[in-house]
Image (tube, rainbow, N blue to C red; front, side):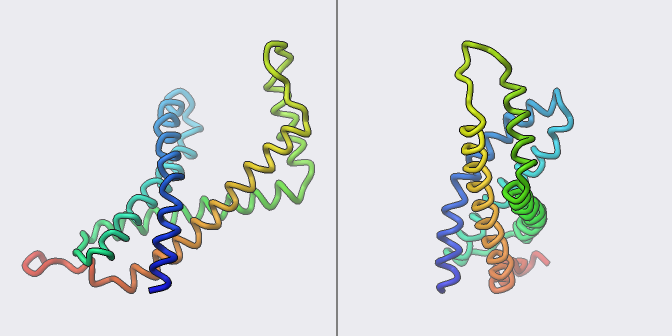
Length: 172
């Protein structure tokens, strides 16, 4: 039961992020129409959103002990695998960002270049940019770590509650 309590807490922590990612995904689809290179990022975001909401649905089925469609299990698993890949990649990128100062410098240089010399825009100093990047990478690495824990708990609970996905009598 302790495992289920932890799973419930983590699920509710992930839901606001999934809602935000859903909005970003919708905007990303529009951006990807003009820039097909953005499709991969949109795909990853969509998989995370789908995983989070299907795992939430699974949690509701566990609580009510109502049978679930076998397709729910498939949706969870497929999107969980993509989410594991995304989360692992994000954690590795964060590690390299903090370990190699040249990567952070390249980010900052690109940002300053993109910022240009527009006098009407408040220019961020390299120190402020670095602080912002540090915060962003820390938040996303923490999110990725929590998501990985959630995914592993989900796989364990899928095995534990496999009977919820049994076909109804007569529908075999």
